[in-house]
Image (tube, rainbow, N blue to C red):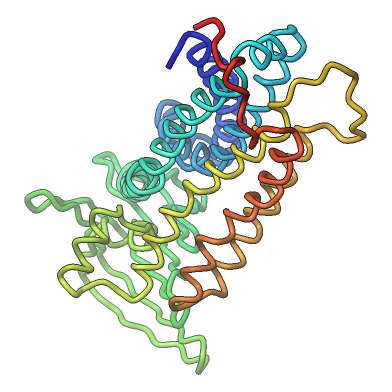
Length: 366
């Protein structure tokens, strides 16, 4: 790239980075408020709460990246117009430096989006699910507050009446409704932690397990003198099993013939995510790249147009992902982010970007 293209490229980069940091910070703050119960109800440290909320940042960035890229382009070109830099670029070199800067910038954005959707987001979600189960296990083992009911995980409630001098629980109660077909309640006079190799167990004494089947309304009870249950099994929220694996893992399962039918669609959906960055960025460029020597008569800001287009595209993409299936569904996954190409071509043609600059005018400053 020549100097002008490099200058425009870094304009795009700085503006987009600002939008990414702003939206990622707002999303992280919302996630931080959602995990505040780790401190208030689950007795964890502030460091644990911040660390758990930070694991959601890659997914937040993956969601807003295509919007940030488009807004970064519109803001940069608007700034070039306001500083009277855009018209000299067009008059001396034509749109070529802008094309070079846009191409390089969109390649960087597409590559970053692909790395996010295929690898970074699944890994961060898996780590978040794993950490959530570890926090729940610690709560069951050590952090439960005597005399108060604590929601260890959704539909999993724990309470102990007190602790003896050795730290063992007195009056153990655990209600588990995570199974949609049957709930179970553990009641015991005493609970004691024990460890076998690297596995931690809760040893219950003099108690009972009550099972309630929702479909039949039948209640059954199993009494015991001693019952040992794994803390890991109690703490599991099934979040890890629900997290989508990385694309490398999915590809390996497909090659081994062990992947579910939806795995191929998952790979297509992740790959098509980069097309939103590419084509919405082109649309934003088409709307703002032309030098205007007179005051714009637009009643609606370009940023609003780009933002609304991006939201509509994403909504259509979500609908296609839910209802699409087979070859037609995969085709629609890729066609949806390509919809801005039509207005992009029309706007570029109207502003003369698709016409070749006369040869005597193609020189200019490097």
